Length: 298
Length: 261
Image (cartoon, each protein chain N blue to C red):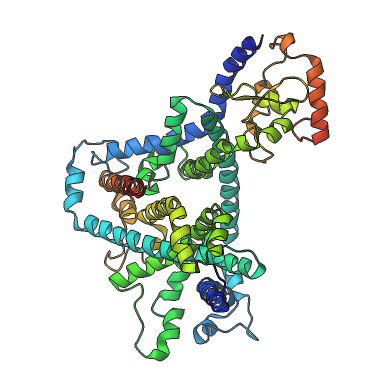
């Protein structure tokens, strides 16, 4: 009796599951998975994005990209932003989350101050900071009494890279703090209670209790932020458009420029695939490093 | 952990500094949007006392080069559609994947998770081609579909974890789910799920754990159409006695379950 029901449910169930899963899967396959494979295919061609003929050129695009100074520069800039941004962001957001991990009206006020940039779009934030930081922007106005002339926050190569990184940190800070706050909530209160009984001071509690318990969350967040910085694009568009002289071109920015401005779809796809491989390799390295590290500690 | 007054003061000082870092730019943007350009350049920090003007807003809304009201309309359309479609499709997909033990579901989940790592610029070039071939390039639906596809991974990631965490409240959820309509809507959609619980009240109904809590965006919505329900007549009468049905509907009524109408 029950068996027949189960079989029937199973039969009806296949169709049901398929129906439930289909819309999302179709969209994902059609607009992410298929394009991913297409990108790899185009990276082996010299397609310009419009013409009907697509010539297969093998690894030529990759060979060109490896020795292209512009590509190398873009990878260096992206790596610099990713490493610096991830380090600064995590080093600031974790302590901030510890300080904010309390109830009370004042703390709620601090929290909302930290969180609000999340609701703005990256491009808007980029433009706002661009108006603040350019040569006659508000920051230089305020620095004028110091009498050093305008500082080229966005006009001097490495300074511009630092400015973009700072703005990305500014906007992502609240998001990361939320993630750390959520992780902190999982630390059981009685451990803190016990530590208090033993007379442990705040720094000891943080380094001996909070940090080890949060370790998996920290690794996850570092990865998340690294990936975020490796695909950084909107801030560059809004703040410097890649300038001065290509000094702030990130890989993502360069991909779009190669493909759509220079109409070299094939070459842009090759650069994009290189970026993808870099991201995957970074994620795999860090996650395997962290798991072997935690295994050794046990 | 001793909370000294010095420590407290330090905490407030650092948090205030942090807050200023975020609030001062906001303040500047808001304040200067109510000033004339000359005033912005002269005293960018002050509040627009006495020189308050809405000129910038008027200029923005009447700019001949850019129709800002239409831009807001488009943004609203895109946002609402993308959020609605993502919630609907991602929740139903996660539901199927989280409840299925099959290798395929696992593979699908992992490949969607991998999508979190893919920089959008990698897929945007061929995605433009795909959309052009579909005749959707330069149209709102095309943009919406692309946004949905690229936002699916994060939504699936969240939903998947959420749905997997549900069995903790199994008893309560199961009781709530004695609601006939919901049971019919969701019954048998999950072939991989073999975990059944008996509810000790009433008939030994197999209540599956996957029944979702009262979240507004869970996947029952697309299953609403009557044609999707298993037809009652197909089911052998012995497995669905009418007595059980009525007891369930009364349970429904008690719980004011919105799904039973």
